[in-house]
Length: 217
Ligand code: DX5
Ligand code: ZN
View (tube, protein in one colour):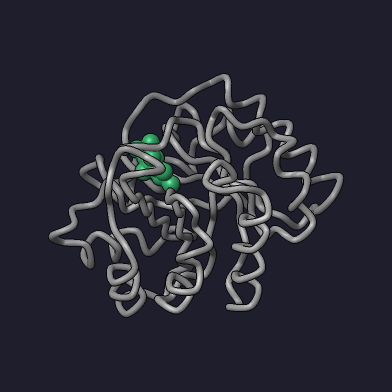
């Protein structure tokens, strides 16, 4: 089954609890952490994840768009993340491996994320230990930019690597996912779809989640 992961980046932060409850029919809650250095935007951090953890039982999928993420893995795990993804571009390979080791020690699920510039093969050193690979289909920055269709090839290549080395690993696509693009990413091999503006930009939020699921039938 394909999973839907609404991104709270497009929620109303004044009414975050209300907006989290509105997506309780989804599968994961996607939390975009941006540090103003790895990406030119600053979003939310550890105290907010801690507060979110208190108000929902949803699976917290925390996407770390931060430089040198190994520094923060333990803190986000303790704050209540269920899964953490670190960008392969955010540090040297040895420090990415260290970030994954810390995730293992903390008992959270392990993921790596790829910006559009990064080739699928970059996941190879880590693939056997991963629970999820996140492929960006926009340049990470703000919610809402246009879907990059060229990234479908990267999704296909990562799916092939997953099938070969670790078939249980999930493949998440993040950026520009909407009812028109959702079938394309699923056809390319994704099984977790992040959606920010397509969910929170809708007047009927549960209806928007249903529309995404409906687009896949
Ligand atoms: C992009 C973030 C995404 C973003 C997706 O910088 O990592 O999670 O919120 O938003 P939409 O679905 O609006 O492209
Ligand atoms: Zn994200």
